[in-house]
Picture (cartoon, rainbow, N blue to C red):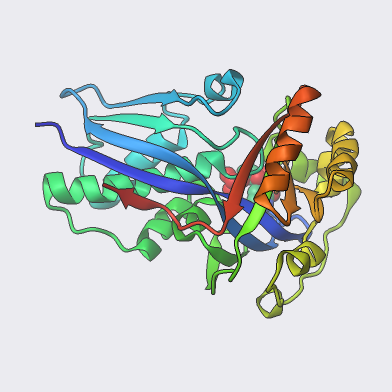
Length: 306
Ligand code: C5P
């Protein structure tokens, strides 16, 4: 009998994204307030035929097809790298696996789509190795340490909820969840933006900013949340895709409490005070040929699903 393990993991928005000056290692210190959204990747693991290695299959109906096409299915996929990293951590050969990824998070959108897949794979493979080979499960902190080596957003996708991310964004300090459900409209650009390119533009425009104490922010309503939202990478993303500035304005005219580039962009995350208004605005945008999704936050971190 084939063993089937299913896991899901959330998308993220950076409610606050403060970015310091570039360091000698090429990375930027960041101070980020992350929120996980109920836009979840779904990953299913099944034993592969002996000797076939890791095969990855990507599909999804809720995103434009080009997002599905853009995901590599070879060893450059983060899911493949997770399989190698976890196997090497346990000193075992990389198992033969079939991995099915149901994509719901836009690709190259600044919403941690690839990192979410990696987080789901860490959780699923951790369980698979326990059930199939009796290997003791690693803790979330241990999985996060492994994930951090592969991508800065992977640890947050493991923890979910509301958290502060420092250093490269991979050092996670969990915060109590928001006590209200926040409603988001996510406006997906036709064009992707690569994270390194946006950080590079940021370096051209700025020497880096100072950091605030994000743990002391008081956020008890959508209005208070709108007032704290900020993103130091926004100027760089807008410089690379100038049309995003108009879209931001348009979303605020249509009733968003705040519309902001998500992480390194180009997705625009717009906060609304009702889910109903989000859905109305999605329809208005659709009529203009603009693709948008609706989601809510907070959402749990990567977890097994029965
Ligand atoms: O860690 P991750 O693979 O997601 O980062 C992708 C790229 O984004 C890095 O190679 C680096 O160019 C840039 N980056 C950065 N500072 C960070 C995180 C990412 O400059 N804190």
